[in-house]
Image (cartoon, rainbow, N blue to C red):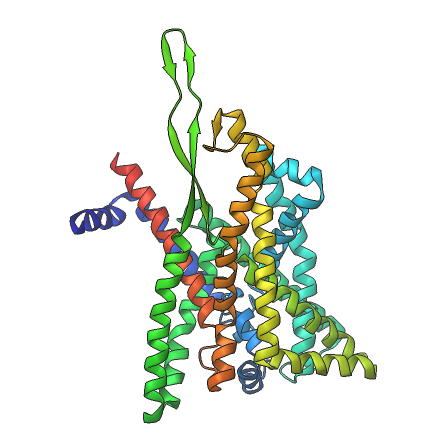
Length: 424
């Protein structure tokens, strides 16, 4: 086992093609980290740190910006506009038959068209998100009052930074190893760990040692659980009908259809965060007009977001809802039943066609429930910890662990596939 591991590790750095792909990933991530520390003009860092310390929601959102939001850098929006555009396009596959046909029926050309539509949609989303964040930060006193022209220049700057970061992620996907967007988010999380740990150690006292040891043990347990759930799947047995061609008997093979428990991955958390963010951004922008009712609504929603129990309950329900919703988008029992029937395959004991579709749909719904509950608990775990202990140092632990573990597992599989390809 260890000999095979070291052999593959050696091949990773000695094979020219794999080494070039690894260097592309490292160079792209280094460029991203350089961009993430270039701030937009006029930032009050004292108020910025206080604002992030008191707002756990923006701390969660900072994950998906790759850490750029906490520095108000030129890439403060991260890849969020492109991710949101991709999510909207995936939802459109359920609403518009033309989009569904382009994505599922036209093969590689259809997927290329789908990605191009997502890029175009990301442009207005980046502009709107840039305006919302800058208005919110200006109202908090973190950014100064700017003339309209300079404000528009800042919006254009952060929107262009988001497009640049998305382009870097696509370069990683094409010329490197792994999914570029996921690796950028992963790099932002990992880059923030040293400062977070050092701040916690500086402020820690002897009485805090048991709590920190408990957090370490909890982190290891959650990491183990994420690995197990990410790899867990329900295997549906699949058999192929026998067919006689001439004197030869063909078919009759048996295999299985894997249905993952965590089919939706981390996407439901992004859905829930986006839905919870929109009212806050919208009310903050409208409250700036000076209407008392809007200002009162904005204050009420800010208080709701700050309450870990109320916010956590809604967040948990939204994550479960969106887990089922996204699973329904990405896993179509009707299409799966059709594909099985066309290939001469069937599930033993279940009639092909509509009965197979109903059976697969029922299994997916049952399997999705524990995955949705696990994902919801992982998302609200920081809020529960804050509500019970009052500790806010580990607010993004569960979500960050889920992203890190899934990205590492995916990257390990991609590297192993590259190494195995060259071994044979």
